[in-house]
Image (cartoon, rainbow, N blue to C red):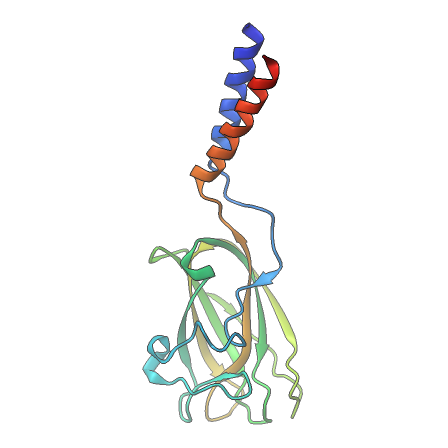
Length: 193
């Protein structure tokens, strides 16, 4: 009897710890924003109404707007752990409209998760219509929203990019982890009877 109660107590403490776990199995780069029909970028959340319509699956500002601030919702507003960015620069024409410098700042429930992280994408090949994936490692942050600021371009009259994706891991709900633990505990105790 003493062994049963000792095992039950130990497993209960183990499950309590698991209920606060922050990470699940990491996934590859996800949360496509631009080539998914621009579904997460709208005129309402681009600065100064500077957004232009999709041009060959490219996000680009209107002429004369060489910087932009874009709010991106991650994973439908659910919390995710972000530790990397994949970025495909603007490539339809040799126009200097690709993003030269940018920052990304992450928010969780409206609270900033630290200072904005700068990154500097390379300009894609002259005249190339095939963008190159560029990867940027960032400090791991838990977020539900990102604010992307395109600061400068390569000398053109607007600024744009083909696609941005985030390397994310879903954050499990503590209650679901606790329920899984309690279910496992009941199976163990049932086998011992």
